[in-house]
Length: 454
Image (cartoon, rainbow, N blue to C red; front, side, top):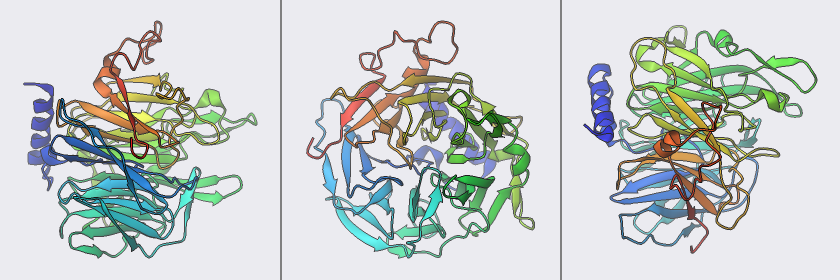
């Protein structure tokens, strides 16, 4: 049995035993609401790229076919006349893409001619994170939600379901006392929003409180806080601050993601701004949701299968391991730093656990690397917030790929995740790519020009 067939079989087994309501083998959408979105149509893979971010304004967006069948020619990059959009996602069932607006308007892009239409979400007040602010902050797609294919949009007032066909705004789902997540994860099997979040107390110093990993059931609208969140988010200890003191290491839960083959959810952490560089947070949270219990009276959830795993050597991401995207149907993930005032070209790959249902899940392997200069020889800069990463399974060769867009929105880097994990490691290290590995000539990284008309 080849690897792709084995992961599909595992996904089917997961559905049988745990009662998921969607076919895992058919899910191709991303399970995290980062900036770029992917749409697979036959042998073509299209990438939707928003131009704005939560701390930088540039109007518009583009769509680029980043993979075609062998010997076929990809069409040129198409400009989309959207407003200031920061996150895009696409529905395979309808072919419709949705891009969320930093301010009050969001947009849908309809096939076959990429016709753009705008709509008001009714939310214009912005919510603040340590990396920026937005009124409409991220989007994920659920093609099997009751009522039809639906976009889930994070807004400052809660999570807004938008039915795509026929188009209809649904009531906003409240997060209660929690803030929304700028990069929420999504469980399309059980129709749950996975919302790592924290509350900003002071916009000058960006002090925060109440880190949580909230789970929201989109069907009932019920929101559940992690029952032991105070202990859990202190489990990895503290970091040393620039002033010589210490601060909570995992106070800033950043991004959520979900592996449809195992039912394991993930969370990343942004490094607190006053942590010294030597104490860069290189932690990832794992939650086995197949073991989870939900207390509807208390509004809490937990699972015995959870931990914060510290990833040794993953220190070239100066803001922490912020961006994550899991390959649909494969237990592989791409991770990346985000670049703000400071930052790096650091990225990496994770080999995720392939079983669930008992015990505590842990990552099998990981590797860190540095993104090479782009084809114009410019130093690679990551894409700000929302994180500029997504992932997909190729319809042409069944490999799992990560995609990372740059800050300038000129290139996308397509990363062979298994190729990166299988490449030589630096002598004396366990998880650092060898300096002898050329990411371009080895075929591990392929750059795609996403500039208009290219």
